[in-house]
Length: 119
Image 1 (tube, rainbow, N blue to C red):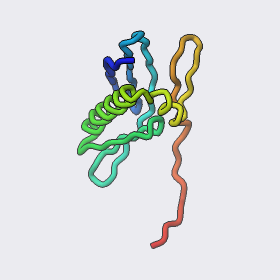
Image 2 (cartoon, helix red, strand yellow; image 1 turned 90 degrees about the vertical axis):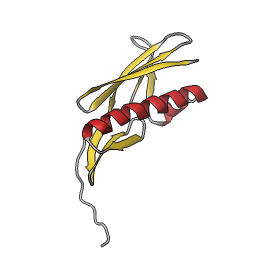
Image 3 (cartoon, rainbow, N blue to C red; image 1 turned 180 degrees about the vertical axis):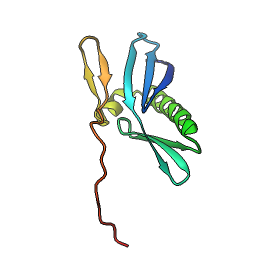
Image 4 (cartoon, rainbow, N blue to C red; image 1 turned 60 degrees about the vertical axis):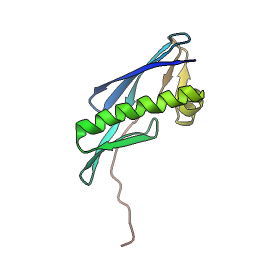
């Protein structure tokens, strides 16, 4: 399986990536939840579905860098032949209907919980 191209288009709080494999040109398209938050003066982009994060000095830079990080991450797993194992380890499921594709774990909520941290 050869790696051809990954492109990313951002939708609010979601990244959509298209993965093309040269061997059979099978196209995988899925929506990937991405959480953006501020850490000090930096903007952090994090996807629990890939356990992948990056940051930028601005929100736009964090989005751009996340797209680049996903590109490198998926490209390397494809080169190493570990994409399927990595996706399974991250909780993705391969479904067959209506066509074969991968489904990432879904973020079902976000809340704040009080915790006690020693001073």
